[in-house]
Image (cartoon, rainbow, N blue to C red; front, side, top):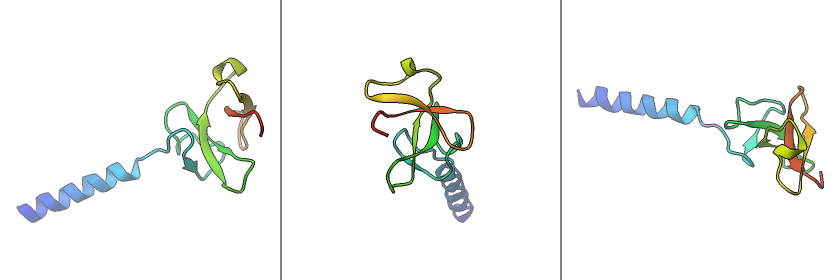
Length: 86
């Protein structure tokens, strides 16, 4: 019984780990994807060689913080709050 319980616990932990979503600012793989990032975020290209990061979704400039611009994201019609310098 203990072996079955231990195996079940490991299986549940593996499922939870697979469902992790990156936070805003965290790394992601597919520009335009929302499934790789947390709520209200989208995977966005960066201007550096670092690849992509999750950034907050926006519809208008007022959705973004000071120092950010609401710009389009590759591979779709979504927009994200991106640093003004990019």
